Amino acid sequence: MKLHELQEAILKLKKETNTVILAHSYQAREIVEIADFTGDSYKLSVDAKGVDADNILFCGVHFMAETAKMLAPQKRVFLANKNAGCPMAEQMDAEMISMLKEKEPDRTVVAYINTTASLKTVCDVCVTSSSALKIVKAIDNDKILFIPDCNLGDYVKRSIPEKDIKLLNGGCPTHAGITVKEVMKAKEEHPEALFLVHPECTPPVVRLADYVGSTSGIMDYAMKSDAKEFIIGTETSIAEHLQYECPEKKFYPVTKDIVCHNMKITTLPDVYNALKGIDDGSAFEILMDDELISKARKCIDEMIRLGG
Ligand code: 13P
Ligand code: SF4
Image (cartoon, rainbow, N blue to C red; front, top):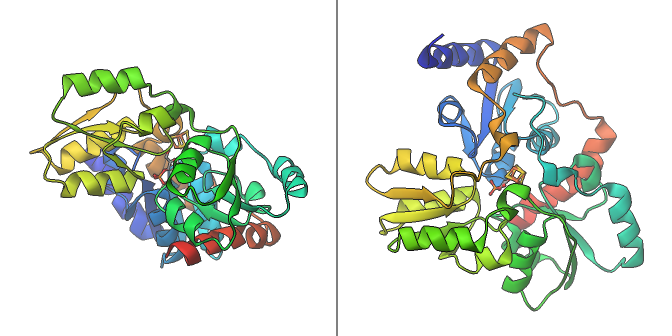
C-alpha cells in the first residue's frame, strides 16, 4: 500500500472502531497527519481526559498511554507499538522512593510524568516539562524531592532558588547526549540562529539557550518568533515538523543523531495493525487495575489542578 492509501485506510478504521489517535510531537510526520490530537505530554494528558470515543490509540511511549488510561479509565487505551518504552521512566521504582520518603518525610515528592504508574503511587504531584516551573512554584511546601530527571530538576531548581529542591541522578539518554561542543559547532555554522532547547538537556547546554521549553513550547516559540533561523535542541523530529509548518524559516537539529529510538519505533503500519487488532484482540491494550489507577492518578489530578 502507498503511504496515502495506508493513511486513508487508517482514517476509515478510526471511524469504524470509534477510536481517537493521540500522537506525541516526536512521532513521524505521517503519523502526526492522521492523529486527532498532537502535542507535548501535558497537552496530551488534558486531551485524553476529554476524549469522546470508545477507544484511544496512543502513538508515543508506554508511560504516556498509561497516563491516558488513568485519565480516561472508562475507555480502552492501546499503545500502537508495545515495545515503545521511555528508558527514563524505568530508572526509579516505588520501593526506592518510599525509602527516601521515610528518611525525609517533610519533602513533597514531585515526579516528572516520565515515570511508571507504580512509581506515581508514592509521589505527591506530577509535572511535565511545560508545567514544572508553574507547579513547583505553586506547591505549598519549600522542601521538594524532584525525580527522576536531574537535568529538568536542575532547571527548575535554578529558576526557583527560594525552594530547597533535592535531585536524584536520573535523566533522558537522548537529551543528555547533546554536548556543548556540538551546540557551539551548530552556532558557528548558523550564527544568526536562535537556540531553542528542551530542559532534559544538561545544564551547560541549557545555559546556552535563547529559549527553554517543552516540545510544544519550542514549536510555538519558533512559529511565533520573528527570527528566521533556529537550532533545535531536542529530538530531530521537532526540527522536521517545524520545517514543514514554516517553510520560509530554517530549522537545524543540533546534530542529526538526536533520535529517541523508542519514540521512533512506531510506524504507520503499526498504527494500521493496532486499529485492525482492536476487534480481534491482537492490539496491545493498557490494562491497569482500579486500585493502581486510583492511587497513581492522584498526582496526575494534582498536576492538572495546579497546572491548569
Ligand atoms: P514533552 O512533555 O516536552 O513533550 O516531553 C516529553 C519527552 O519525553 C521529552 O523527551
Ligand atoms: Fe524518554 Fe528521552 Fe525518549 Fe523522551 S526523548 S521518551 S525522555 S528517552
